[in-house]
Image 1 (cartoon, rainbow, N blue to C red):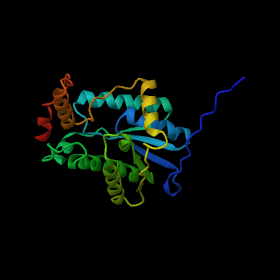
Image 2 (image 1 turned 180 degrees about the vertical axis):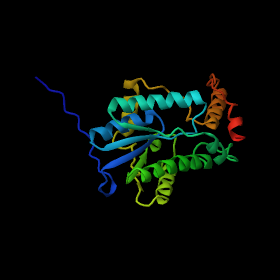
Image 3 (image 1 turned 60 degrees about the vertical axis):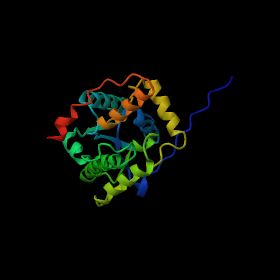
Image 4 (image 1 turned 45 degrees about the horizontal axis):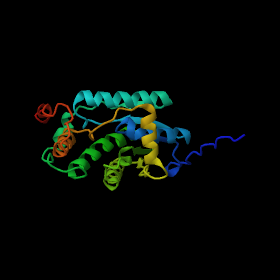
Length: 222
């Protein structure tokens, strides 16, 4: 009688021998496989949700609630950094026409990871990381640069630039998302990525994503 091969878990060691990790998460699909890997490796991980870029608010709530529910399922602490989107819109003002992976994304990453690093410093976490880099739509070097910049502003806190795309990480992200039935996002998150995705879809003769793409005006003026 043949027995199923035992699944081998990834061995992970946090930088500097740290015992706890604060993990910034952008959404459940990106975080799912990463969280499971960390839990299996017995890393004491806390999830930090800070994403004021996600637009509109019903989209933001949907992504946050799904991420929170999955964290609860795994027994992982979830920190809801429910940020006001107005400062985000002010921060990216003048960069509205930047392409994906351009300067606007850099500012966005820096803002979210600065918040993560500050929380880490205030709550005794020596190391933080982010799920942002697992997406093939993101520039991994740009994400890591933002993380290192954020860490430099917080003495005693370091950024862990682990490449979650490797060692089957990208495939596991897909597998976990399918197994859990995660919400299938059709754009990165911000109103500008929604706009650009719809421009692309129209060029391809596809239906546009139905979301409120004008309400952001009130945040810019706030």
